[in-house]
Length: 251
Image (cartoon, helix red, strand yellow):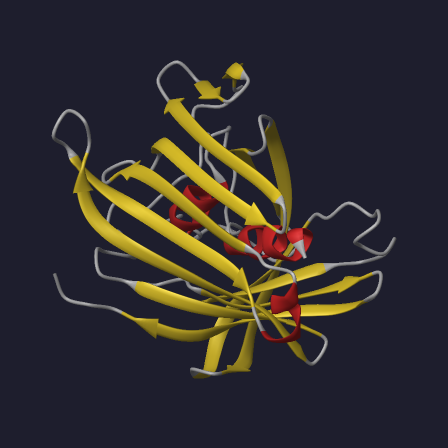
Protein backbone atom coordinates (compact mmCIF):
# COMPACT_ATOMS: atom_id res chain seq x y z
CA UNK A 1 0.00 0.00 0.00
CA UNK A 2 2.94 2.33 0.60
CA UNK A 3 3.76 2.02 -3.10
CA UNK A 4 0.14 2.75 -4.10
CA UNK A 5 0.20 6.05 -2.22
CA UNK A 6 3.60 6.89 -3.72
CA UNK A 7 2.20 6.07 -7.16
CA UNK A 8 -0.68 8.50 -6.55
CA UNK A 9 1.72 11.38 -5.95
CA UNK A 10 3.96 10.31 -8.83
CA UNK A 11 1.04 10.38 -11.23
CA UNK A 12 -0.09 13.81 -10.05
CA UNK A 13 3.36 15.19 -10.74
CA UNK A 14 3.76 14.32 -14.43
CA UNK A 15 3.43 16.60 -17.50
CA UNK A 16 6.19 18.74 -19.07
CA UNK A 17 8.60 19.64 -21.86
CA UNK A 18 12.39 20.06 -21.72
CA UNK A 19 14.13 22.73 -23.80
CA UNK A 20 17.86 23.25 -23.15
CA UNK A 21 17.39 22.11 -19.54
CA UNK A 22 14.80 24.85 -19.01
CA UNK A 23 11.11 24.10 -18.68
CA UNK A 24 9.20 26.93 -20.43
CA UNK A 25 6.12 28.10 -18.59
CA UNK A 26 3.19 30.45 -19.02
CA UNK A 27 3.23 33.60 -16.92
CA UNK A 28 -0.49 33.35 -16.17
CA UNK A 29 -1.06 30.69 -13.52
CA UNK A 30 -3.51 27.87 -14.29
CA UNK A 31 -4.34 27.63 -10.58
CA UNK A 32 -4.99 30.06 -7.72
CA UNK A 33 -5.64 30.16 -4.01
CA UNK A 34 -8.87 28.38 -3.08
CA UNK A 35 -8.56 25.58 -5.62
CA UNK A 36 -9.40 22.09 -4.35
CA UNK A 37 -9.05 18.76 -6.19
CA UNK A 38 -10.03 15.30 -4.95
CA UNK A 39 -8.90 11.94 -6.38
CA UNK A 40 -9.78 8.27 -5.92
CA UNK A 41 -7.38 5.39 -6.49
CA UNK A 42 -8.78 1.94 -7.31
CA UNK A 43 -7.03 -1.41 -7.24
CA UNK A 44 -8.97 -3.34 -9.84
CA UNK A 45 -12.60 -2.70 -8.87
CA UNK A 46 -11.82 -1.95 -5.21
CA UNK A 47 -11.39 1.51 -3.71
CA UNK A 48 -7.84 1.65 -2.35
CA UNK A 49 -7.10 5.27 -1.45
CA UNK A 50 -8.26 8.86 -1.67
CA UNK A 51 -6.27 12.04 -2.17
CA UNK A 52 -6.88 15.76 -1.86
CA UNK A 53 -4.96 18.75 -3.22
CA UNK A 54 -5.46 22.38 -2.18
CA UNK A 55 -3.86 25.73 -3.00
CA UNK A 56 -3.57 28.63 -0.52
CA UNK A 57 -2.17 32.13 -1.05
CA UNK A 58 0.77 32.96 1.23
CA UNK A 59 4.03 34.96 1.37
CA UNK A 60 7.71 34.08 1.10
CA UNK A 61 10.07 34.90 3.95
CA UNK A 62 10.98 38.15 2.18
CA UNK A 63 7.34 39.13 1.70
CA UNK A 64 6.91 38.06 -1.92
CA UNK A 65 3.77 36.37 -3.24
CA UNK A 66 3.74 32.60 -2.89
CA UNK A 67 1.47 29.57 -2.87
CA UNK A 68 1.19 26.86 -0.26
CA UNK A 69 0.41 23.53 -1.94
CA UNK A 70 -1.06 20.88 0.35
CA UNK A 71 -1.71 17.22 -0.43
CA UNK A 72 -3.01 14.40 1.70
CA UNK A 73 -3.55 10.74 0.88
CA UNK A 74 -5.05 7.91 2.90
CA UNK A 75 -6.22 4.34 2.46
CA UNK A 76 -9.91 3.63 1.92
CA UNK A 77 -12.38 0.74 1.67
CA UNK A 78 -10.96 -2.73 2.29
CA UNK A 79 -7.43 -1.29 2.25
CA UNK A 80 -8.18 0.88 5.30
CA UNK A 81 -7.15 -2.12 7.45
CA UNK A 82 -3.59 -1.03 6.62
CA UNK A 83 -3.59 2.52 7.99
CA UNK A 84 -1.97 5.08 5.71
CA UNK A 85 -2.29 8.83 6.11
CA UNK A 86 0.33 10.98 4.44
CA UNK A 87 0.58 14.76 4.31
CA UNK A 88 2.71 16.94 2.01
CA UNK A 89 3.35 20.69 1.89
CA UNK A 90 5.20 22.59 -0.81
CA UNK A 91 5.80 26.34 -0.78
CA UNK A 92 6.45 27.87 -4.20
CA UNK A 93 7.21 31.32 -5.57
CA UNK A 94 4.09 32.76 -7.26
CA UNK A 95 6.10 34.12 -10.23
CA UNK A 96 8.50 31.29 -11.06
CA UNK A 97 6.39 28.44 -9.56
CA UNK A 98 9.62 26.93 -8.18
CA UNK A 99 9.68 25.43 -4.66
CA UNK A 100 11.71 26.91 -1.81
CA UNK A 101 10.46 24.74 1.06
CA UNK A 102 8.86 21.29 1.30
CA UNK A 103 7.69 19.04 4.13
CA UNK A 104 6.17 15.58 4.29
CA UNK A 105 4.70 13.58 7.15
CA UNK A 106 4.46 9.87 6.28
CA UNK A 107 2.36 7.51 8.44
CA UNK A 108 2.06 4.04 6.92
CA UNK A 109 1.29 1.26 9.41
CA UNK A 110 4.20 1.34 11.84
CA UNK A 111 6.43 3.30 9.44
CA UNK A 112 7.10 6.99 10.07
CA UNK A 113 9.05 9.55 8.05
CA UNK A 114 9.23 13.31 8.44
CA UNK A 115 11.13 15.34 5.85
CA UNK A 116 11.98 19.02 5.70
CA UNK A 117 13.61 20.15 2.45
CA UNK A 118 14.95 23.57 1.46
CA UNK A 119 15.55 24.51 -2.19
CA UNK A 120 17.97 27.21 -3.39
CA UNK A 121 17.21 27.45 -7.09
CA UNK A 122 19.90 30.09 -7.74
CA UNK A 123 22.73 27.85 -6.50
CA UNK A 124 21.06 24.63 -7.74
CA UNK A 125 21.25 23.14 -4.25
CA UNK A 126 18.83 21.17 -2.08
CA UNK A 127 19.11 20.60 1.66
CA UNK A 128 17.38 17.47 2.97
CA UNK A 129 17.51 15.08 5.91
CA UNK A 130 20.90 13.75 4.83
CA UNK A 131 22.58 17.06 4.05
CA UNK A 132 23.15 19.09 0.90
CA UNK A 133 22.61 17.91 -2.68
CA UNK A 134 23.60 19.56 -5.97
CA UNK A 135 21.32 19.56 -9.00
CA UNK A 136 22.51 19.80 -12.62
CA UNK A 137 19.56 21.95 -13.73
CA UNK A 138 18.18 25.34 -12.71
CA UNK A 139 14.69 24.00 -11.94
CA UNK A 140 14.45 21.24 -9.34
CA UNK A 141 11.16 20.22 -7.75
CA UNK A 142 9.59 18.09 -5.11
CA UNK A 143 6.84 15.91 -6.63
CA UNK A 144 4.04 18.15 -5.41
CA UNK A 145 5.47 21.38 -6.84
CA UNK A 146 6.36 19.52 -10.06
CA UNK A 147 2.70 18.74 -10.64
CA UNK A 148 1.61 22.35 -10.24
CA UNK A 149 4.53 23.72 -12.27
CA UNK A 150 3.64 21.31 -15.07
CA UNK A 151 0.16 22.78 -15.33
CA UNK A 152 1.74 26.10 -16.31
CA UNK A 153 4.10 24.71 -18.95
CA UNK A 154 4.07 26.11 -22.48
CA UNK A 155 3.15 23.01 -24.51
CA UNK A 156 2.61 24.83 -27.81
CA UNK A 157 5.48 23.06 -29.60
CA UNK A 158 5.16 19.55 -28.17
CA UNK A 159 4.41 16.85 -30.77
CA UNK A 160 3.15 13.24 -30.45
CA UNK A 161 6.04 10.84 -29.86
CA UNK A 162 8.36 13.43 -28.30
CA UNK A 163 10.02 12.65 -24.97
CA UNK A 164 11.19 15.04 -22.26
CA UNK A 165 12.49 15.01 -18.69
CA UNK A 166 11.63 16.39 -15.27
CA UNK A 167 14.09 16.72 -12.34
CA UNK A 168 12.85 16.24 -8.78
CA UNK A 169 14.07 15.57 -5.21
CA UNK A 170 12.60 12.58 -3.35
CA UNK A 171 13.78 10.45 -0.42
CA UNK A 172 17.17 12.20 -0.18
CA UNK A 173 17.92 11.79 -3.87
CA UNK A 174 17.78 13.95 -6.99
CA UNK A 175 16.29 11.97 -9.85
CA UNK A 176 15.12 12.50 -13.43
CA UNK A 177 11.90 11.18 -14.92
CA UNK A 178 11.38 10.67 -18.65
CA UNK A 179 7.91 11.21 -20.16
CA UNK A 180 6.55 10.64 -23.67
CA UNK A 181 3.71 12.68 -25.16
CA UNK A 182 1.23 10.35 -26.90
CA UNK A 183 -1.38 12.74 -28.34
CA UNK A 184 -4.91 14.07 -27.76
CA UNK A 185 -7.82 11.86 -26.68
CA UNK A 186 -11.37 12.51 -25.50
CA UNK A 187 -12.18 10.39 -22.43
CA UNK A 188 -15.15 9.92 -20.10
CA UNK A 189 -14.62 11.05 -16.51
CA UNK A 190 -16.71 11.78 -13.43
CA UNK A 191 -16.64 15.38 -14.65
CA UNK A 192 -18.02 14.43 -18.10
CA UNK A 193 -16.34 13.85 -21.48
CA UNK A 194 -13.09 15.81 -21.63
CA UNK A 195 -10.51 16.40 -24.35
CA UNK A 196 -7.16 15.45 -22.83
CA UNK A 197 -3.44 15.37 -23.51
CA UNK A 198 -2.15 11.82 -23.07
CA UNK A 199 1.31 11.06 -21.63
CA UNK A 200 3.31 7.93 -20.80
CA UNK A 201 5.89 8.36 -17.99
CA UNK A 202 8.77 5.92 -17.55
CA UNK A 203 8.39 3.22 -14.89
CA UNK A 204 10.91 0.64 -13.75
CA UNK A 205 9.95 -3.07 -13.59
CA UNK A 206 10.37 -4.75 -10.22
CA UNK A 207 8.28 -6.09 -7.39
CA UNK A 208 5.42 -3.67 -8.20
CA UNK A 209 5.43 -3.18 -12.00
CA UNK A 210 5.42 -5.86 -14.67
CA UNK A 211 8.29 -6.05 -17.17
CA UNK A 212 6.23 -4.47 -19.97
CA UNK A 213 4.03 -2.25 -17.79
CA UNK A 214 3.10 1.19 -19.06
CA UNK A 215 1.75 4.12 -17.11
CA UNK A 216 -0.67 6.41 -18.98
CA UNK A 217 -1.81 9.83 -17.77
CA UNK A 218 -4.61 12.01 -19.20
CA UNK A 219 -4.48 15.78 -18.57
CA UNK A 220 -7.26 18.18 -19.58
CA UNK A 221 -6.42 20.04 -22.79
CA UNK A 222 -7.49 23.47 -21.52
CA UNK A 223 -6.25 26.36 -19.41
CA UNK A 224 -6.42 24.30 -16.19
CA UNK A 225 -4.49 21.21 -17.35
CA UNK A 226 -5.76 18.99 -14.57
CA UNK A 227 -4.75 15.29 -14.47
CA UNK A 228 -8.09 13.48 -14.50
CA UNK A 229 -7.14 9.83 -15.10
CA UNK A 230 -4.18 7.44 -14.87
CA UNK A 231 -3.85 3.71 -15.57
CA UNK A 232 -1.01 1.29 -14.86
CA UNK A 233 -0.52 -2.50 -14.81
CA UNK A 234 1.10 -3.94 -11.68
CA UNK A 235 2.26 -7.47 -10.86
CA UNK A 236 -0.85 -8.43 -8.93
CA UNK A 237 -3.52 -6.39 -10.63
CA UNK A 238 -4.37 -3.08 -12.24
CA UNK A 239 -4.57 0.40 -10.71
CA UNK A 240 -6.32 3.49 -11.95
CA UNK A 241 -6.76 6.97 -10.57
CA UNK A 242 -9.57 9.36 -11.46
CA UNK A 243 -10.58 12.86 -10.50
CA UNK A 244 -13.49 12.56 -8.08
CA UNK A 245 -14.31 16.21 -7.46
CA UNK A 246 -12.94 19.67 -8.21
CA UNK A 247 -13.69 23.13 -6.93
CA UNK A 248 -12.37 26.59 -7.69
CA UNK A 249 -13.07 29.29 -5.12
CA UNK A 250 -12.85 33.03 -5.69
CA UNK A 251 -10.36 34.73 -3.37
